[in-house]
Amino acid sequence: MAQLANWLGPAWAKLLVGLFAIALVVSLGLVAAYGPEPWVISVQLALAWVCLFAVAWALHFRAVPRDRRRLWLALGPGLILLAIGVAWPGGVLFLAGVGAGWIVVAQFVLRSRVRMEYQAAIKHLRNSNYDEAAAVMDRLIEAEPDDLNHRRFRAEIYRLAGRLDRAIADYQGIVARDPDSPVGLAGLAETYAQSGDFETARRFARQAHERDPGQWMGAYNLGLIEDRLGLAAEAVQHLEHALRLGVPQSRYRLLTHLWLARNYHRQGQPERAIAQLNLLREQTAGLRDWQIVFESEQAAALRGLLEPDVRLAQAIIEGENRLERLDSA
Picture (tube, rainbow, N blue to C red):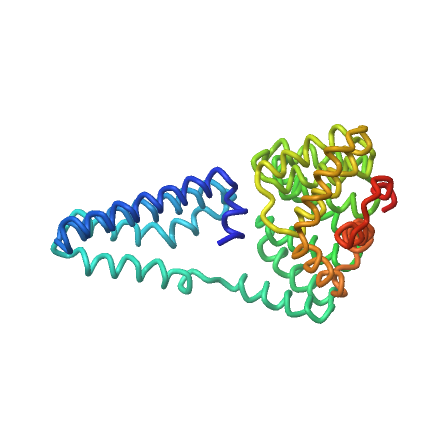
């Protein structure tokens, strides 16, 4: 659920949670006031339909255009049957069951070989067989060249393997086909940052953030890159924006507070820097997460980019309090 909320963004997540809460309160209130009358069941089903449609519309809004047809093939018939059940009280239970059943069964009926291809590639990745994983995706890209998700996944394989030039080529291929793709632009930003070319990384990170300003990761990446470039004011602006959007995981909040402390220190604002260090010390779970991540062989690229900062964060959690240490990573 946390991953879904993060993907949908804070605005959609809050809207859906509020809608579900209202539907639950109204449903329980009707049962308490009138009991299990047939019309009460119809109203409850109508509320459930509204909630399911809202989820479907949120998924449609966030999904890339090529994935929307499959989404509605999976959800559309079930929603139609549920709507008929609301209008036909006599068949409400039957149609509700069939509609809900279709939504579940459709996940299996519409599952394609792509799922198996990805599973095979992931199996190779777990064994650090990067060439074999990339070869699986090569065949899939050849068979379905218009699906940019395949190229994105192959780029991630290349990044794990340390073949940043090939990853960049795949992300450039995504952007060539879809110039407004936040995924392609963010991938270029992250890969150039891994290579140490922060000026180029910042250019792509800004474009990615402009395309999708409601996603915390875009602001987070931009703040990371600007921290590396010593652009204190810009880093503070984007990292604070990421926190306002809602950074969902402790390990990312840990580094966000560290970079904010560093850049407030660079700006000559020690009180704000110390406040960020105090917030950083609350993210012990995030520190443990990074330590587990860095134990993996696949984390080599991340270690080069982030491990010095994670070590500094650990020293701060353990009691280091000198602001001048912030620039030691």
